[in-house]
Figure 1 (cartoon, helix red, strand yellow):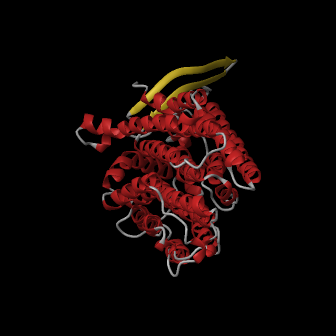
Figure 2 (cartoon, one colour):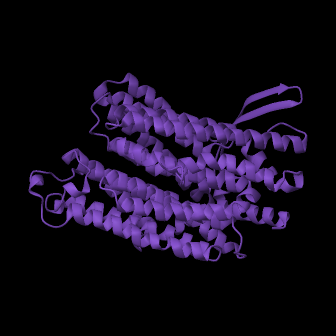
Figure 3 (spheres, one colour):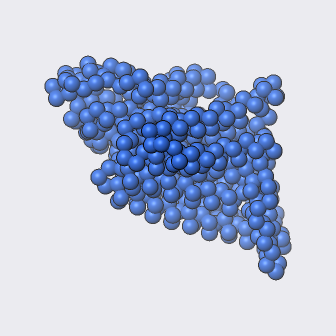
Length: 529
């Protein structure tokens, strides 16, 4: 019990209080200090175990045996035979460690990239820090109620960041985001309570069922305990709905383009880079790992929805003229890879667990790679918007003559997003396609056309905006500054490193994902399906 996770979760909240008490002119740099410290501490989640184990990635453990644990008693109320026991329980294994590091990095870069915020800067920076606390809590909560609580906490700062500092339709976008997310949260809480009471009715003990480890321990034996597959499917669908909205998954995706279009640049970076991944993380960590039989029954619909996400999101991107809205629909498309990979991991067909683990590894890796690549795209659009106050693709032309630095980094981000070999996007997509083919060969064949669609809308956007003859209207436009290039170059190095040497991330994920695959296989075998 090092309490490192507690520090990572609540240090940003301390930073938010410090920012509100500091002079206005120091708010951005004080926020950078706090988020920078959080990022450095988060890297120890990876470096510390590797040093102590001599480079053995298996030390990171899994949901049953996480390396990092903070735990203390919190709520323990007995009402007759009903005992409501909720622990303050944080944990981090391989699956959550890399998401905690990504959240810390993108929040730090978002603060650095928020130099254009002049209105109520202290409040803006404080809300970014509070948002970091909520997301950190989601990724390391090891109690189902605590998970739901942090899920709700994240909602408040994101709503305010869009509603106060967004574009012309900011209030509409913010309320749409809130309505979708709150409805999903309510359904998720219903699913958690249903799981709690179902397990209690079968075991005769209504205690400790909110605890992550206790629930996971029982979930591997749900069929033995009498919790039928139909009950698992109902609970799966209730909790899945919240994650499907956050991903976002078709047909719950319509809030995302509005939120992205109206949000400030740094908020768009965090929304696409981190908040969407909360849904993917929950889908893998809770829906699949806790209700494996329910997930197995829903595998085909899940795979079909994943392919719809990929193709529909790509086609919508193809017809957009607003750069931000194009990237938003691109996120819908790219999150389809996560859905397809998860479906292949829990689906029928593939008897070789290596293919299932490859698909699930690709899905998890896509969470990280999409976060970094999309952050680069939004940062690039943000620089362009600060100069031109426009995002209309057709209004530009030939900008490379005036903005060579932004052109090459934006081109790099585009190539990474379309899955160029040697960059991180290729590794994740390749693993998803390879691992899913033996389970859903026809669907994978349809999904493969997404690669062509993605290349179409991204390269067409790049050609119309940055290449060709210079539009005389932009003769006076200036290139990105060194400070504006700092987040972009940082992310570009990370994208290149993971693309060339993905093994360190695969090793980090392997113990957790292998444990999940074993849970799925055991549940499917026990059910005789």
